[in-house]
Each structure stands twice: as structure tokens, then as C-alpha cells.
Amino acid sequence: MQITKYEHACLVLENQGKRVVIDPGAYTRQMDSLENVVAIVITHMHDDHCNEAQLDRILQSNPDAKIYGTDEVCKRLSGYQTTAVHHGDFYTDAGFTLEFFGDLHAEIHRSIPLLQNCGVMVNDTLYYPGDSYTKPDREVGVLACPTSAPWLKISDVMDFVAAVKPKRCFATHNVHLSEIGHDLNNGRVKQVVEAGGGTFEYLLPGDSTETI
Image (spheres, rainbow, N blue to C red):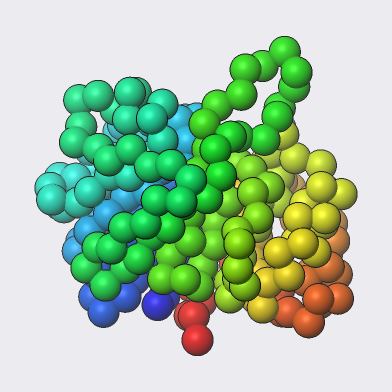
């Protein structure tokens, strides 16, 4: 499976010519040239993960693509055909398996109501937690690790990575960082990943990596 990182939180996964798109949000380039998309996963309803204009662009070329999201995502996208997902749900779609973990977005501040959030494990290999520190119940081959956000503290990210102990890890959810910020936060994550015996990659938007 090929994993391509797009801007911010968006990932495009390709397996045997088919694609899954995760979190095509407002901070990501216009996604109007993708073909063979069978599924779109939206971990939660914030605009940087869920954006109707992006969905319209993807669906124009892929009208049969299924949309998976939390109840709140499905309510927001009431004009689209969606499938609500919850912790423990498992789906198969054209050579992909999608398993969902967790229930809530990480706290931004006690004054801001919590949203629903579901992390996703794809093909029992790639795990992306969305905006959460939800740890899956098994070994993780590749972790897409958030490294910047209003809800994020780097010490919490380091604890999360240490608990997951992925074999491989790359940074995502990182549009907020300057070049210096990338170097700093990536360095902290890399330190913890390597301490657990894994390897860390820094992918720029458009860069790809392969699962083993």
C-alpha cells in the first residue's frame, strides 16, 4: 500500500490501483484530479478535516466513493450519502479494510465542547488517530502522528508515541508549524520512535512511502 501525505491532515492511500482518502480538509490543496477513490474517511467534523468543497471535487470523478464519518460528520453532511462509524466498527472496501477506534476529540480547552472523533486503522497496518491520542489495541506498523494543533502538547504526543510503539512513524496534522517548528517537534517524535525500536520519516506534502 502506498501512503501519500497531502497538506495538513490529509492522506491518500493506494492499493492495487484503488484509493482511500482520509480527512480532505480546507487546508489541503484542491483535490480535483484523483481517480479510483473507493472510500473517504473523515475522522471528525472540524473544517481542516471535513470540507464540502473538497468532497464535491473528489466525488465529481468518483461518484460511487463511500463516505465514512462520525455521527456528527454524517449530520453535517446530511446532503451526502454517508456511513456512520463508531469505536470497534470494521468495513472492507475494494481491497481495503477500515477499522475505527475511539470516540472523542482531544480537549482543546475546558470551555470548548468536545466533538466526536474516530481514529482509523487501514489494512491492519496504517493507524491515524485523527485529533486524539486514542491507542489501538494492537501493534501498529505505520503511525501517522499529529505534530501540531491547538489541542496538542508535545509531551502528550511523545507519551502517545511511546505507548503505541510503532515500527514506523511519520508526521502529519502539521500545517501550523514553521520550518523551525517542524525540526523541533519532529525531533522529539523521532527520539521516542527510535527509543522504541522504530523509524521516523518526515514527509513533505506530495511525498509518499510504502507499507511493507
